[in-house]
Amino acid sequence: MDGSQTSSTSNAPPPFLTKTYDMVDDPATDSIVSWSPGNNSFIVWNPPEFARDLLPKYFKHNNFSSFVRQLNTYVSSMAVLCWDNIFFQVIGKL
Image 1 (cartoon, rainbow, N blue to C red):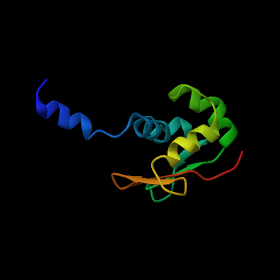
Image 2 (tube, rainbow, N blue to C red):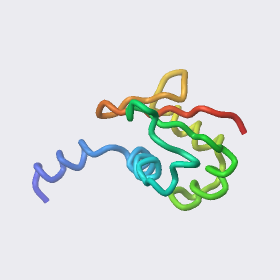
Image 3 (cartoon, one colour):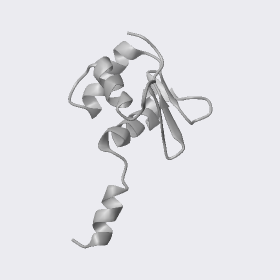
Image 4 (tube, helix red, strand yellow):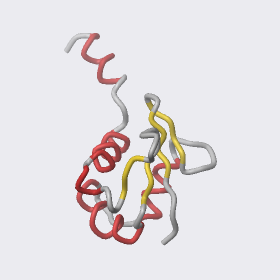
């Protein structure tokens, strides 16, 4: 492996963000989680269904609070995160 392969890997987004992006970007999940009207954040419309049906497909758990906690590791105080001009936002309560 040469240095160019290592540097391109280090510039990749964390797996958590990649999985979250894939989950939100899937049109089949729009009734549960979807991009905001501006396509620069996402909204969890149905947190219980999100936890029960979607989280286990992408992560090793079905805990909405754990998902938000993980999301918060990328931001300081709110469940909002910007990566590559995309804002990840969680709205809703269990």
